[in-house]
Image (cartoon, rainbow, N blue to C red; front, side):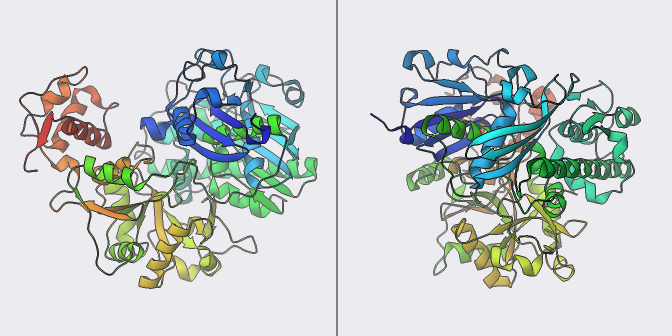
Length: 635
């Protein structure tokens, strides 16, 4: 009979940023977001429906649903809402196997993920996001900590000791909607995450574009004081409609650039001031010196830096998957603690939650994808060859080991480039990432060199998970203009040989070539696409984004001469090609005259705007080729 300490626990985050995590004996086997497999950004998981992420975890461990000792799931939606009956999930077959099922509220899932990954036995724990579980879905100890018993949780203050997480205070929406679109202009809001999301929606057209607001903020000035966003009454936040009423008009970026830069800076300032109030309150209430912090708001590196320096805690730990995908990790650990009892783990300073891919899978991807070649540089290591190409101005993909669960690429699924060239930032933003020109890129630096380059002002000079924004030393910023933001800051990743040996060796090779111990690092994905997961994703990503090469598990792969992306090629339908459902219009566009770029434009003109992207079209064309239904002229 299997020991409880060897139990297999599946954790599921059934929401947007849907994710799954599998533990074996308290050790993380793998965890992944649904979007990485479906290739649909921010893809959801529903409790009652099969999930690619769940199957990925089961397959990675070589088990079936009947082998699971417990399933723990969490959702910010009401437990009884449509599509969330996990007992009806045909993939898990809960009834057939008699698998125990436990529900975990959303903020508690965040809290467990933060403390479990921190390696701390005892700490204060803070969760701040847009919205969590409704009050009625909270268990009594957590419901009694609510300051205002209505709506959904938005801020949670806890203490944790040996796996017991005790709520100190909980803040809710108070019955209002956390994010309420008005139909015209800025939405109203009832949480800190909702406040930031409302500004994102006004400037960039979607609540989920918070990262863009953070990047734009240094270009502006504080023109709106925090009290126009909220007031604080007896420790409770009261959110105002003053700012939404001031922006009761439509017109997304790049319109109103000066006005919107000031709005971004103002909401960033309001968020920082609110978080410092909360963190200092938690410090007083808990008496702890260690803070573990999670929730979507915890991805704001600028605010995190102020918390670290001004919040009153000696140490601050934020998990890599601080947003909703990390709830699956929290759910899995919660189940393990229920079955086997609490045991403190080690601090996790890396994010390599996906499964590794073998040499045969890389070879299969190379065989599958046309117009790529595998050069064999003579007398040069893969690290030295990659560094040489980067110093020559090329852009490369770096694919190594298990993928990251969180939203930051940390060297497993990265695009890398030379940070010394002023042109690098503009070219990456315009041509490869196809995004706004103001967006910054991260510096990934050898850990031992970080104090020489960044002004830590006496704080711990480590940022392995890219969750801090730190100022460059004045004399250093000008040396790396591609990763120094307008305010001379960088969203810093410190890279050690112990936690990221392959990425460390790449940066060291670049240092040996240039004397600069850091690289530009950004996520390996195209516009509107999730980060790549598989070797084939990486090759299609190279062709779709126009990268010069990718390194996949130490194999250098590049485009064949004369091909910039797969869209440069002209597909032709073969005479005996059969048409399947939904393909008639796509095949009709492939008339043997249009190349991929022209086909993409034609499909968008015909209403495919939300259904087709460059990467998606590349994949669909390659699939048709693999089925011998099309060929590419000249290849």
